[in-house]
Length: 188
Image 1: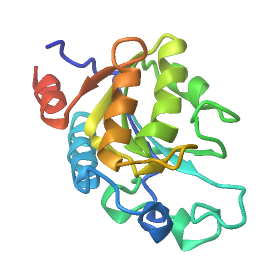
Image 2: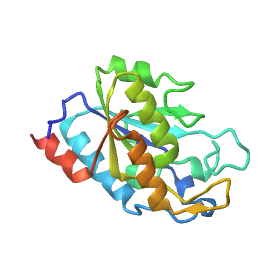
Image 3: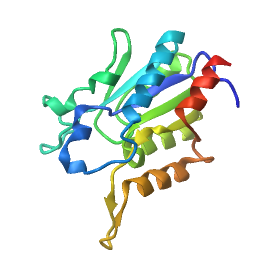
């Protein structure tokens, strides 16, 4: 179990009120925000870098659209003064933003990724982070997915969508960990 460097950045993706909109349906990991809050507290206590990613949808019917209540961060994991907020309009925090530049200027080589949705913005951001050469860790119990229906009409439960997304990332793009493991690594 390798300790986390002081430069390890916590990345909180799209944890906005919009994720509670009924259009998403039931999700797995209802405790994800509580796990993210634990990680935020530890990162804040140790002075490590934190990046909050906010999705500003350009779709008129999206609960994530700027100017709506859904665009606001959930209070439990909201940024504090001095913490970086990166606004994005696509699934990856790297597309159309200066996220990579901000991370590099902060001297971060390790990204610890949390948030929603595991199979969308979390996976897209983690894949790009890995491809860009960052040590990338996705926190399984601090991410969440919703059910998806395939082209054949089969609906995949949120737990399966989440597990498959983590399996897609594991090894090639990222390391998969849980909150308790990461908190131990901070103490090492």
